[in-house]
Length: 110
Length: 506
Image 1: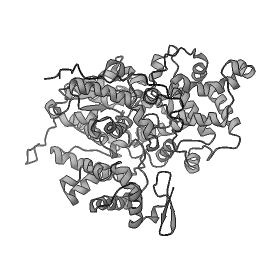
Image 2 (image 1 turned 135 degrees about the vertical axis):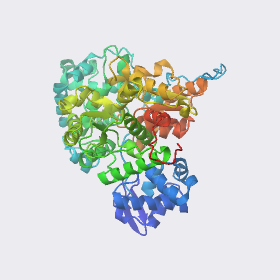
Image 3 (image 1 turned 90 degrees about the vertical axis):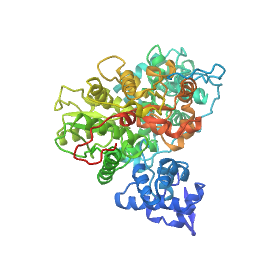
Image 4 (image 1 turned 60 degrees about the vertical axis):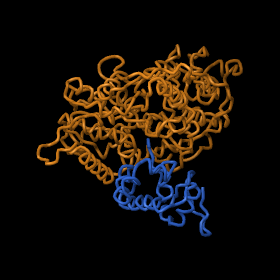
């Protein structure tokens, strides 16, 4: 798969996860989100930005519980549950949010 | 209060209902092909080799030599039909190639052509066929529509194990350079990082510390999740999904609370931070061995006396049935305990000895049933009694939960249905197959939901948990209707709050 963005072809794997993570930028994220039929709200950005910060530090996406805990601090109890995350990212916060954040897909029995 | 009066007027879903035949319905279902990098990392050709036909036949010959059972399975089918309606993927899709006998025949017809006298001379009389590109395509499609759950083999009068045949099929596909991305990428991560997720030591440590904080916030008890602690008595080997996903992590918290309550000295290893062994799914003894050896090395390095496995279905099969052959002998472990031991055996033993205390009412919002995971049910045992793998998890659940109800007898225990995502098929591009394959289990769950008001289902397999969390909404159930067995233990267990603390709220 390829994303056509600003006159560039940006490669991704079969499922739309970027193959070169360094090519990510917020405008490209909007394009990926559009493909996923997601309109990015400030809450979506909170999730995506946290995923990227965490990835920078640990080279892996955070566990769901790590994510919900971080969101609880920033957005409060109501906007931090797993259920709320599924409302933001209906296909699943781990996979869909990682794709929009330009991170690799979490693998394994998840 | 236990029973809800069954509604006689309700139309009962039949989990065993035979669908109308839809030839070719699933022939387009295929997982992504492994990239050259993922293939080469495991020693397989990067892409389809030029002489794939010769390589495939040679590999088949090698497997027949090494694995006597495979030849028996290929020789002994008499087409009695007992297996035809036993596969959840057949029941869910109606595609006749998902009848176990038809799936076997995809390999059997080529075996007959090349390895039997009758097939060499009179192929059309004995159903022997040449290996063509179309056959390879069928192999790739339909050997990835078998979750290796072995339900069909329970009903086969000859005991033919279709799982072994689809493992052989996948092994041949790997040998010609046509591997499956999901499994092979993951196996590569285990070799380099130590687990399926690719969760490195720093991230693992930070995740475990976060869980310790959460437990103490919730309970006031400083329950620890030690990592790489040399000299610990017990090494816990658990699926990496337990560190990452819901409801898996609630099970991990449950194990930690049990260890804490028992006063056990235990540790997780960052080197062997994975119980799952996808080497089995691709039929590769060598990959299975390399993954299993990490557990041996970690156990030796940490100097533990016991190895306990967390809630992971096929991991328990590999551990229970093959670990000693793959990575033994384990004569350095304490012989007074099972080598290895399942976390359910560990917890049940403590319950039987009266060492754990529960407040069952903490689970009173849950009306529960239990899904027997296929590999645990049909390829392993727990405890020292036949059927322990069925009884022990149920005994635990009944000890911590007031409302427990079994699903229909022909859908549980040794006749259990696969969740629909086992055997290396838990990947997004197979979602259509996964949803359809879950239908017998979902119908069985609907039965107890209707009759007993069941709200939740517990399981002891990471794949089952992820699969059900994904597909249950399709069938009208809540996403969080699937639970870890040790999550229910975690809810009900009473831990002693240290006296040094001033606040005594729970």
